[in-house]
Image (tube, rainbow, N blue to C red; front, top):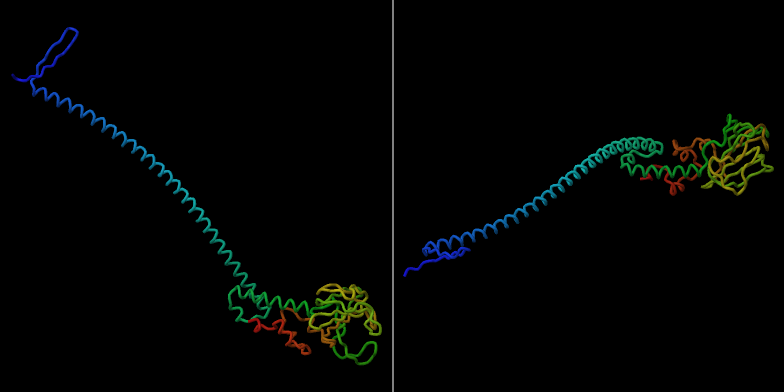
Length: 310
């Protein structure tokens, strides 16, 4: 008996049987299985595709964020480059200004070196070394110019008598004149010619000086200011160069209003004229013209020429 597939359909009107051939039945079964498999595979592929799309969307968002970050970084770089360009421009301008200032400084420094008597060998050194030597030389010279008498002690009309032998106007005989007489009206200010201490201030009896101020200075120097109208300092007090210490007059043995000014070293009178002319511009001049002072011992403390600065 041949095998047949019987399909029974049941409805409200009753049952109905349908007989199919076995091959047709297998074909129908395979079709149904393939349809089911295709359905599941299609659903799986659809889900996988949706996952891939979601991943792509996330990747796109990440790339967009990275692009925005990159654009922001690029704008930051551009801003930094602009700032750097501005800084370089300012640096270039500053370098130009510094070059001009260095040129001016070099010119002024050369003038100062000339006044200080520095050698060409010193001038050929670096700017820093030149400045250091110039500062040292200036300090040494200014220290000596404040310690040793220099300059004029009064604004006088003229010099009546200089240092040296003369006919004394009162005694009427030749006598050594140990100072310099400046013709000046009574009450003319008298100034200290160096830093020092007041050794004597007042009327000196029997000396002929009248009102007298004696100042002690460094290195054994003294200055005398005589025939004063009024003394403005007291013994034992310190005075500085340029300080007003008295008023000129006609006291003591004098034939007219004037200031008698002396420079002494260890009680030995010296010609005041070289001291009055002494300054930065002729600093070496004093040490060669005044031979009575042993300047060699002083040079051990303060170099008196450019060779010892090197």
